[in-house]
Amino acid sequence: MIGRNHNSSLRLAATSLLASSAVAQSNFTCKSSGTGTTYNATSKYLGCYLDPSVSILGAVKLSTIAMTPQLCTSFCGARGYSYAGINFGTQCFCDVAPNFSNAKLVDDTKCSSKCYTDPSQRCGATYVESLYQVLNPQGNASTGSASNNYIPACETSPLCSHQVCNTSLSTADRVASLVGELQLEEKILNLVDSAAGSGRLGLPPYEWWNEATHGVGSAPGVQFAHMGSNYSYATSFPSPILTAAAFDDPLVRAIDEVVGREGRAFGNGGFAGFDYWV
Image: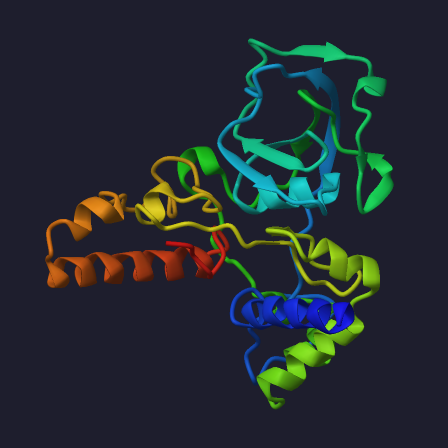
């Protein structure tokens, strides 16, 4: 019974991933290089910093149990940020420049948290940040020229070579194929809101905890680009209980349409997931 429930949960998760980050074009050919490859940041390690107020980097944040230096620097660099840092073992922070006003450089041994999916690397520690400079960011977040060329996972190698990306199959068959390829530890790491994905398969991490209770403009799980650039803002609405008190069905529908459009846009741009709790 436990095994059946376990696989059912994974199938539900995989179905949502198929509808979001792993959407393939039917005419796409899997490549190992070229436009269908995932951006990988080149970075320089700057040291280990005591960061008691978590204020060295503060523009964008990503949290996942699959955190590694490569994942963090690529996440930040893909959004045009030149600096990336890892705190608490699982949290990645990005910004255009570091703020050292409340920080102190400490010995590298203080960055003692092992990255869960790659224990050979360190992912900061509690209020201690492993800091990196991204040497090849895509655009410049500070000028609004960051790249928005988000590539769906099924258009990148190695995931595109797996049956989960075969659009000639039914959704059920694609989900079953993905679940069948996940190892036990990978399945466990995908049963949390900050799902780890699978680096082995090329399945990216996914944050399930996206909220739109007040609209996309005030939503956990949604990331924003630097002020003035695309994806730097969205609409924030009154709380649902206040809106409902108006007994205005056309108003509620109009709000829902805006939330839907903005949510889809942020998902398509790689700044949010595609499922929202409201």
